[in-house]
Length: 303
Image 1 (cartoon, one colour):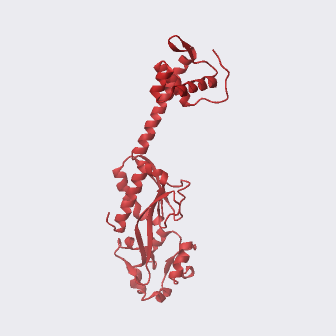
Image 2 (cartoon, one colour):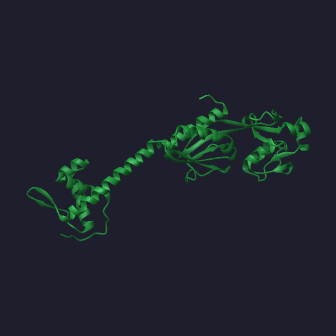
Image 3 (cartoon, rainbow, N blue to C red):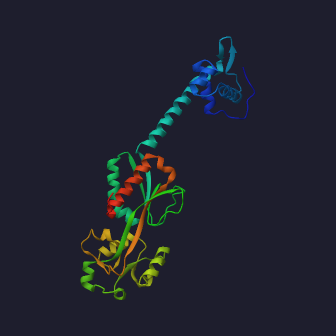
């Protein structure tokens, strides 16, 4: 028995209604099984029949009788039901288990010098987690999902971003002991002009802010200009000259000495940020919290 085919494609709800009628034997029983009303089930069956151009059920003295078309449809509808159930289970597991991939972005210094130890603990605690680490001093766009979680030195401005301030990371001027033994220790900022200074090559907005507070920070006065902070840190450790370094990183090397601590000090507020939509997913939430706790330990803030 055929019907005129419509241009409206059937969806899973229509097939689910037909399968329920086949399993339960009537519209009313199918409606109870699916928690729907009988008229709604009837409309979905009719929509499916119009979409396929066939009659699936005919009324008889004993209720609805399945046609050959309905019986032929049944195994495929059952496959749809099984696939949908498997998909729902997979999504539920993905949302509530700490497994899968998390993409994290951080500055080169944080990503190389600080995060690896924290991420190693995270991996040990959650072996099914995979990490993608993007090292960049530029703010990755979390709104367009360039990354899932970011470690930033500026407060996020978008309301849709979930953020947590973990503390302040302080920076100072440092030089290797061997350099100071050879060239002497500057007594004030004026003395810095006679030393080899390590600094940036490209003028970024935050550098202009630093220059306003510390006028001696000038690109033309740097003996080594490089925008990569890890390269700057390596040059300080190698004894090239005096440069800016995180206090906590300098403490790891007893040969790095703090220069003019009262004249130069920077505090960078540090934030963990992710899109608010991700907070319901356990792998993102766990990683977010773990990074926050690890960075607070690094900074020296009690939990």
